[in-house]
Image 1 (cartoon, rainbow, N blue to C red):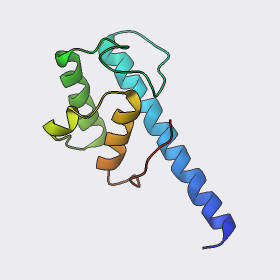
Image 2: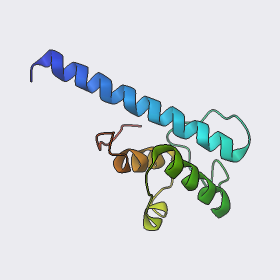
Image 3: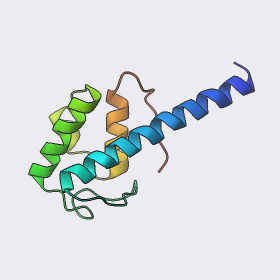
Length: 102
């Protein structure tokens, strides 16, 4: 692959991750019932005040929207918005698994 093709691939990957991040943030706002400015480092429980019921609602919405199945054990490893976006990206077959930088 030449440098130009690599740059295009990286741009596409970044665009997909940006879109995914925005969609996840919209679902977070929906579950919370208010529009928020959400950054990747925000902690779901401590900063956004997610309790177990809200987390369950969010997981159900994510599974439905992205046609994925989030393993119950995975939920315990999700602390931040970044972690959540990564989990969805890694489970979505249309996205390349990657470690998105916060």
